[in-house]
Amino acid sequence: MNPCPCGRAGQVRPRCECPAPKVQHYRARISGPLLDRIDLQLTLPVVEAQAIDDAAPAPEALTTAQARELVCAARARQQQRQGCCNARLGPAETLQHCRAEPAGMQLLRLAVEKQGHSARAQHRILRVARSIADLDSRDAVIANDVAEALAMRWER
Image (cartoon, one colour):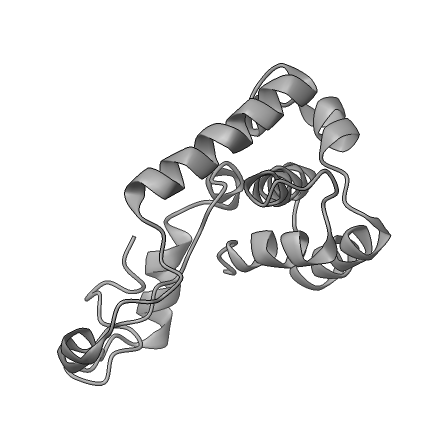
């Protein structure tokens, strides 16, 4: 969804002129329970045209074929470990297969205290963190995986 009714929140040119109450009302149209059911919620910054013109390809950028290989390997790890992909795990299986190392679980607890994530959202965060570890071919879910998964949650 757009960040505000006009879609220009955070832009310099043309600037968003939506009043704060209107933006708040616009964002409230998506309910918390619905947002809880969306695993990845990203806010993408506006990219100026000049930045695209000046951008050099990132040296570590993956090709589509390389990304596909990583995803296939991660899904194979998930299938071998638990018989299904991480997204299909129920609450008990999530806690069994996606639990992070102590520092990661502490980070999740702090985020829950500060941001008030529901149990459903916490399970989704753990499943995303588990997927990040799988993409890195790691057995353990570490604090960095939890931090990355938390960064992919939209804050209301």
